Image (cartoon, rainbow, N blue to C red):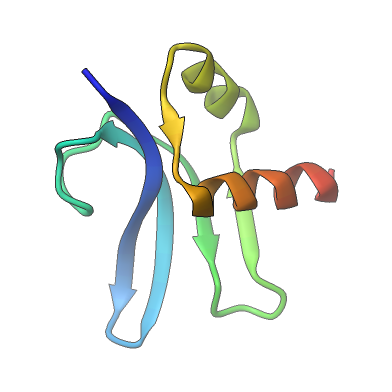
Length: 81
């Protein structure tokens, strides 16, 4: 089973916020998830990034592949700490 760490879009039209989720790679973008590991809101100034880095590292250790966008969010969150 291929597992991805990716963004799931939520919120109103033209005002999105995203949940960082662990999901099967075959699942739809906003479909069934395994676990929610963070949130990202690009509409605030500065953008709000809330990630559970321990859970993310655990999933990566189990073989989950983060998307390019999630990799950038993880790097930004680690710099902020």
